[in-house]
Each structure stands twice: as C-alpha cells, then as structure tokens.
Length: 303
Image 1: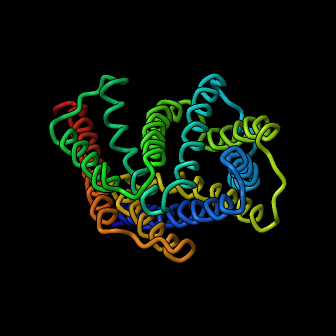
Image 2: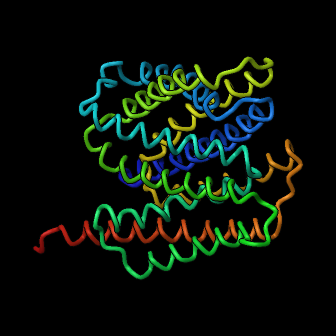
C-alpha cells in the first residue's frame, strides 16, 4: 500500500504537469502567431522566445537546486543539440506563420513517428512491424491533412511543417543521449542562451521596431515556452506511457485558439488526419513502453 501510493502520486503529478505543458505550448504557439500578425518574423520570434524563457528557467533552478547544476559536462554536445533545436524552432515558428494553428500542430505531432525512423537509421535500433505500421499510419495522417493536389494549404508551409517535425525528431534522439550526462536544467538553460545568441545576430539583419502589443505577445509566448519546458521536465517522473496520451490535447487547444483568434474553422481532413497522427503517436509510445518492459525483464537473471 505504501509503495503504491508514491507511484500513484507520481502519475497524478505527471499528468497534471503534462496538461500544464500542453496548455503552455499551445498558448505559446497562439501568442507567437499573434505576434507574427503584428509583423514579427521568425528571427525575432526565436530571439524573444529564448530571451523571456531565461527568467523562468533560472527561478526554477534556484528554487529547486543551485546554479551549479547549469555547468555543462559536455559543451560540444550542447552546441550540437542547440543548433538542431534552433533549426527545429525556426521551422516550427515559420510553419505557424504559414499554416492554421490546428494543421501546423497536427503535423508537428509526427515528430515521434519520425523519431522511430531516425532511431532505425541513425541509432541502428531494431524497429518491429508494429512500429513500422504506426509510422505508415502517421504518414497517412499527414497526407490527409495536407491533401496533395486538393488542399488550400500552401505547399511551402506544409513542407516546412514536415521539416520541423523531422528536425524535432532529431532533437528527441539527441536528448536521449544528452540527458545521460547533463542536468535537465542545464540543457534547457544553454538552449535558451544559444537562442539568444543566434537571435541577437539575426536581429542585426532582420530586427525591426514593432508596436507594443506584438512585442507583448512575443514576450508572453517566451514566458509560456519556458514554463512548458519545465512542466515537460517535471512530468517525466511518471511513466511516459501514462502521460503521453495527454499531449494530443494540444491539437484540441490549437484548434480552439485558431477558431477564437484567427477564425480558422478546421476541415474534416484536418480532424481525420489529426486523429490518425494521434493514434500513430500513441501506439508508438505504447510499443516503446512495452519494449522497455521486455528489455528490463530479459535483463533480470533467472533464479
């Protein structure tokens, strides 16, 4: 009874944190899209998103531990992760600018599916027929959302959204290795620093003056992005299979924000495609969970 209680508490806390993550990230996306309608470009969005997430990360770190945990053990690994992460962020923000929120969010959720492909190609991991079936189902979902040849969505936006999902899958694959040697706060902090540095350079060429409402949207988006990353980190105390299903509520939130702020009414293709992508992602997470259980069982010596 006493052993089960902490596990239950971790699952409940993890689910609540995952809901907080989803609300933070979906709200961030809506705010940054609003900022883009006020004239902010991708370089500016990356800069403000990174700048205003720093205070959140620092306060979180100081309340829980100390700034000593921010010292990187493998600086070059942070450089690689940050470069790939900034590419993913830039592509994601550009997709948000070009596509309705619901469509951009749905396509972004193919990242776990692409991560399966990358784990096979890059990490040489075994991928069984069940996970390949999930990959195929996810790709079918993308085709339904994009409706090649008959979609009102811009092809450039669709291509950028898919590229963003692929790069996000690369980030996921990289983080699996980086987290073995680096503190989570250090990963989040140095990624934000990299965004500020890269964004500052780009601002020299692409920065402009903007009205205060657009800047306020960008600042609020940056704060929520920082909260989202921290909620995501805290949620990992619970089994990933228990919290992953709640990630897909972001598609629902994105659809609501799109209708509320941008008058984007989701088409049946968007709804059906999002359901296919969500099903593929959930099945991938479940198979990964089962695979880890089987590996752990096989590692226990027979008595």
